[in-house]
Amino acid sequence: MTSASIAAANGVGTALVQLAKLAGMTVIGTVSTEEKAAFAKANGADHVIFYRSEDVVARTRELTGGEGVGLVLDHVCGPEFTGYLGALGKWGTLLSYNAFAGLPEENLMAAMRNHLDICPAVRCFSFHIYDHDRDGRRALMRSVIEALSRNAIKPAISAVLKLDEVRKAHTLLEQGSALGKIIMIP
Image 1 (tube, one colour):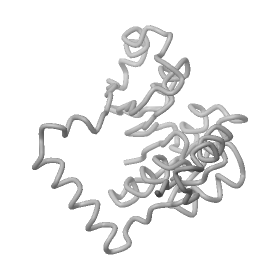
Image 2 (tube, rainbow, N blue to C red):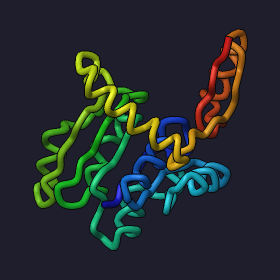
Image 3 (cartoon, one colour):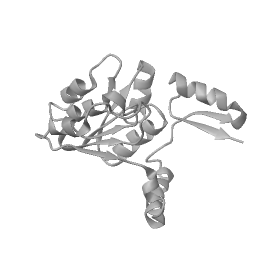
């Protein structure tokens, strides 16, 4: 299966790229700069798309020989969200795990019906699904810890800052210059 991760060089995106590779997927990631492209590839992305200068859907179709991807992971949502349905292959899933740019403005059901030839699915994910599923959460965490212990995944840490440097952390995030996660310590 091929997956596409929006923002493949940020903290969560980097983790998603590594987890997708661990699951045996081919990974296409979107990035904004050459530096982020190199970083995403170093973390396992097979291909990158420069979302500021390339049409993400058209480029995804090109990279997959017209087949589309099985999974699109999007934390931005907003007005671009429904357009990513066009990047999906048959039975593909468009997954939202946040909505930094707000909710889609286009009628999502109408957009999905425009892609009946692939039978797309849309899913919203929140880790809170495990709030009352202690065994499920523990099983998931054990598998991640096990992957970490054998270096199958390696957290990408952009910066380690003290709590009193929280403004600096926000500046890095707002500028989009953090490659990987920012760790805050006491």
